[in-house]
Amino acid sequence: MTAVMTRTSQEWRRLDWRTIAITTATLIGFTGVSGFSLASVVSWIFGWSLGVVLAWLAPGVVLLVTAGLVGDWLRWSRTRYRLSADRLEMHTGIFLRKERSLPRDRIRSVDISAGILLRLCGLAKVEIGTGEHVDKDKTSLELDAVSRAEADRLRRDLLGHALTGENDDDVLAELDRRWVWYAPLSVEAFFLGSGAFGGVLSVAELFGVEADVLTWTWELLDRMPLAVAILVVVGVGGVVGAVGALLLFVTTWWDYRLDREASGTTTGTLRVRRGLMTTHSVSLSEDRLRGVQVVETLGHRLLGAARVDAVATGLAEEEHGEESDHKTLLPNAPSALAHQVAASVVNAAESPTDPSILRGHVTAARNRRLTWAALIGLVPSVVLAVIGLLTTDVLLHIAWSWALVTLGIGLPAAVDAYRNLGHAISGRFLVSRHGGLWRKTTALQRDGVIGWTINQSIFQRRKGLVTLTATTSAGNKRYSVYDVEEHTGLAFADECVPGLIAQFLEPQS
Image: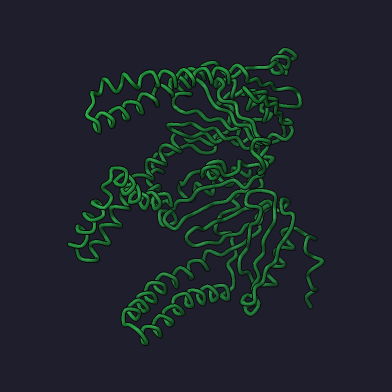
């Protein structure tokens, strides 16, 4: 960096003045819509002229917009930031002055986002953090808003990027629009479909017709056979959930692209760009990467799809359900591509998450799962049946229904969960896989393991099984190999990180 650039970067800077115009436009739009809606309601209730009501509300709207304009101007005029050789500093506050700074060597993330208005004005919001999961006010700074060029300059300077163009980036993955059809089988679709019914009741309650809606719905379903009524409810919820999941995928992952950017240091940076209404740019320095995780929900497994998450230190802490967005490197895509991207991300010649390299677990692990599935199905059924014989036949019907459903679902699920168990060593990675509804294959750098936890319940002891948990500073901190044969598991842990647990192993004769 030249001396001129150094002096420029160390000067105190202001946020972009256009943020004031955006705040004013937002206030005008919000107060205008809210004021008109309120005026319409008041006019309808009291029978007053709509023009008269609007005339009474207009001064309040003008006062509110003016107050917002003045307040945001004061915020803008009192906010300064600068990037020095060793610190990023920001001074802000109107009545209470705040002076905050972050050491440059502790900065781990520079995330850029922009809503529609910011994008139209060529602006962006920049969130800079250390990745520590403590008080966010002490470990991050937010610049709302700066120009796109300034946002990119800050990102490159803080993360040590070389000044290269986008054409020099190594593209690891880009959006294929066919991936959108994986969305209807996502977990979000279920919650969106379930929440649709609650949303209808909330709107009905707002207009005071909740009882009428419930009565009409009950009468409609009561005229149908029970099986048809259940299918109707499930079908409507499924359609609503599927449409909502499609829209959510499009707004979240439109224009998705995963790049490996050049860097001025020995390691590069992974950058994920995505978003339709609000664009996001999340950067992850490769020196913080400790592995990858391929996640497959049951629905996506049926379609042959999976997503890829990063196992890294310093990821943004979960906020409003956005943690998965920060750690997700590839949305649900074909499984073969997911394993290929996982290999590219960790710079491996062969994918460490490839299912073909995994070693299966002993049949005792399968029998343990089958036993638990049988107990969950039979024990409540026996209890209900005994009580039913003494009281009412209704409990007898509940008992056999419970056993039929839980055993019909639980036993196949137990076999599937057993088949999904696996572990392996792939080069510099230890690999583990487990799960049924959510199957997760984790490839964790062996030199990132700082400890092992070995658990053995009384039930596992009788079957000669243990659960190994690798402790690391990244991701979820703990990654387990479930129900592995005891001697095999201990030997696996010792081979993954030689010497870490050797002193606790008994020599085998």
